[in-house]
Amino acid sequence: MATSERHPFLQGLSKHRDAPPTAVVIFGASGDLTARKLIPAVYNLACDNLLPADFFLVGFGRKPVSDEEFRGHAAQAVRQFSRRELRDDIWGRLAAKTSYVAGGYDERAAFDRLAAHLVQLEKGLGREVQPLFYISTPPSVFEPILINLGASGLASRNAGQAHGAKVIIEKPFGRDLDSALKLNATIGSVFAENQVFRIDHYLGKETVQDLLVQRFANAIFEPLWNRNFVDHVQITVAEEVGVGSRAGYYEQSGCLRDMVQNHTMQLLALTAMEPPVSLDPEAVRDEKVKVLKSIQPLGIGPGGDVTRAQYGAGMTGGKPVPGYLEEPGIAPGSATETFAALRLSINNWRWQGVPFYLRSGKRMARRVTEIAIQFRAPPGTLFAEGDRFDIAPNTLSFQIQPDEGSSLVLNGKIPGLETRTQPVKMSFRYATTFGSNTPEAYERLVLDAMIGDSTLFIRGDEAEASWRLYTPVLESWQAQGRVGLESYASGSWGPQGSLALLARDRRIWREP
Ligand code: BG6
Image 1 (cartoon, rainbow, N blue to C red):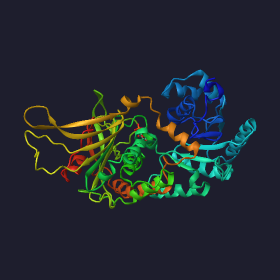
Image 2 (image 1 turned 60 degrees about the horizontal axis):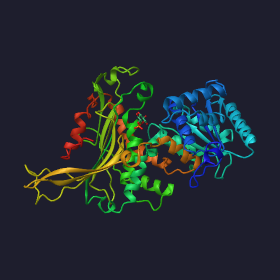
Image 3 (image 1 turned 90 degrees about the horizontal axis):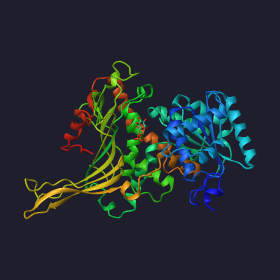
């Protein structure tokens, strides 16, 4: 008999990744993220036989919808956003375990109703379930939800046991150091740190996880991975899309909060951290925190380490597009940055004197996320650059997305009777080697949280270390308004200031 016939969700988890019976409760059930990412993630886990045998999905939201309506909404989300088509058999089994509880986030009685609902599910099952609360709401209601989870006793369900309550918290995790500290304090008053899973979806991306494998499962890199061999590192997180329909959120955020403080810093931390003593979550996260804490305060102002800009009109995908200020919902004269470039100095034994250049922006020339390690140039005694010798610095780059893979630029001889050289590229492409059916980040993250593995989640002190670095920059930008805010054409690689940041160090951005 095929394993799929034995089990309500096909075959259940693999032996290595066993989750207890679980009820995933989504706060913000009718939100955009729930439809685009969370429900499709749960559905794909079901397709891959990775959900526990006893699994429940509970939507919680302010809208008074019935179980049936919520199931319809969820099915529609799968149809529209899942990487796999909706299969009636799999969806049918999942839908039968899907329900909805309506209530306000600050309404204590609603949390009692939720608690009673979970008791009902357990009665039907005849055993306890692990509640996994997923807070996917606007940040303004994080606090009341957390407090009500505490007051209703939901946060301490099955306390101290492997199937004890857990909470996943979506971004944004605060908007500066003070708010992050406050949020951590509220979380800490309700949950123990090992119950808390702060999401940064970049950590769920296959290629981001592969970074750890590439670094620490290959012996050839470690001897080179330091100030003796590395000239500098460039991290680019470029998007082609503009602000779209998210003006309300983005106007409160901007590129530094939206992309740099979290996603880009995670890429940096994994690139720069010391080898952890084990793959235990705390061992990995300790190393990330250590490296984040070694970053020097950023120089702000002319000639400093940071530059910001906003996109103007331009061309994207061959079509004319408006500038940020012309986008719907953007305040006239808004000073929100859609691009930031930075130079970071890590003051530790390994990296002192090796700049890490970061840039991120919307409406850039193309969508690409890349980490490039540029090695020092060889001594120029033999193949001095000139007509015959085109020598490029050796560069190891990890392409996080799209076209996932890595490549190494070497210099080689052009075939012929005289010695001419040219940079050549050795490439590894995921799609070619492994095929292209890669799980979405949220699938991995929801699964890990169910299992209680927090390696790919942000620890409280990690979020604080990053905010500590960026809060002075944000405060200074806020005070300056549009003064010092550059503009760049949509469809370009960013403003002059970004080029100047590297030019000052006699370097240039590579074109990823
Ligand atoms: C989100 C940001 O966290 O990441 C968005 O809020 C951004 O503004 C998105 O577009 C990018 O994610 P990805 O996975 O498409 O690179």
